[in-house]
Structure formats: C-alpha cells, structure tokens
Amino acid sequence: MGRAVKRVVYNEQDIAGKVRELGEQITTTYPDGELLVLGLLKGSFIFLSDLVRQINRPLQVDFLVAASYGDNTFSSGSVRLLYDPETTLEGKHILLVEDIVDTGRTLNRLMDLLEARNPRSLEICALLHKHIAKELKYPAKFVGFDAPNEFLVGYGLDHAENFRHIPYIASLQ
Ligand code: IMP
Ligand code: MG
Image (cartoon, rainbow, N blue to C red):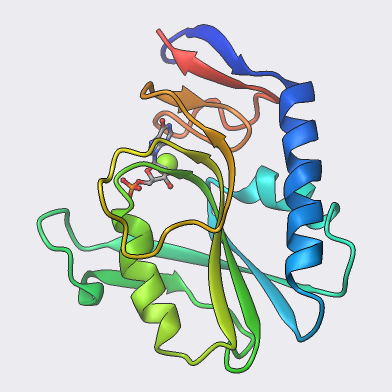
C-alpha cells in the first residue's frame, strides 16, 4: 500500500469551499465566448469534475495527457501529447486545469504548445501552488491554495499512483 499519511492539510470542507470560490471567479471572468476546460490527466480528474459543476455558464470539457522527454530541457519541444483534445482550440477560451504547480516546468512546456493553436485566451487554474519557481512564464490566473512545500496526496494527487482516491489532501510521512 506504500507510505502512511502524516497529516490532513486540506479537509473535504476546505476543498469544497475553495472549489466553489474558484467556480464563481471563473464564471465571472468569462462573460462571453466559448469556454473549453482542459484537464491535465491524471492528477486533475477529481478537481476538474468538482470544478466544472461550480461554473455557471456553458462550457466544454476535454483532457490532455502529456509525457515529457526528460527533465534536462526546458524547451517546448520536449513535451509530447499522448492524448490530444478532439476539439479545436482556435478562437476559444481555454482553461487548463492542473492539480498542483511545483516547478512549473510541465505547464511552461504545455502552454507554449497550446498557445500555438491560437486560442482566444489561455489561462491556468491550479488547485494547489507551491510557489517554488521564482519566475513562471505562465502564472496561474486561478489558484486554490498556496500549498506548503511538502509532498501532498489525495483528491487526485498520487504517490506512485496510490492515494488518488482519498477525498482530502494530506502530506506523506
Ligand atoms: P512541475 O512541472 O514541477 O510544476 O510538476 C507538476 C506535477 O508534478 C504535478 O502535475 C504533479 O503531477 C506532480 N507533483 C508535484 N508536486 C506534487 C506533490 O506534492 N504531490 C503529488 N504530485 C506532485
Ligand atoms: Mg503525478
């Protein structure tokens, strides 16, 4: 089963309240146009499913599965999409949904790639942000919690693929 959980960092109530707030912010930010909510798999699957139910305007949902070629390069060419959205991004508001921003490398690469498809707008919504990176090329417009610099699991986040199903967010022993 892997390691034990050390402490609950955000409980179910904390998370539900925050997701409701984010949903309201997103609803008011996009008064018009087509909105495509793009979940980055696998980590965002629970967050995204709760979040879209708190957004009170028409939207579409799709997912991205990304694989990086290695950590020693920062170029946008180093990210490969294992699953690419079926829908066209051009002319739409794209909201990329991520579980947690750590160094921001994953997002930098992906955002370059998505930007090249000429969306009407392109923003990031992250449930958690560790604020490790000094300078992010694409800062997240919507952030749930400023997370502690600990390894977190639950509510979609994993450690070696375990713990994703836990309904709260905890730090590991
Ligand atoms: P970044 O590219 O360094 O920002 O890493 C982001 C990705 O690393 C996230 O999408 C997560 O999959 C993973 N990650 C970073 N920190 C944690 C953590 O504390 N718990 C679980 N996964 C994490
Ligand atoms: Mg992960």
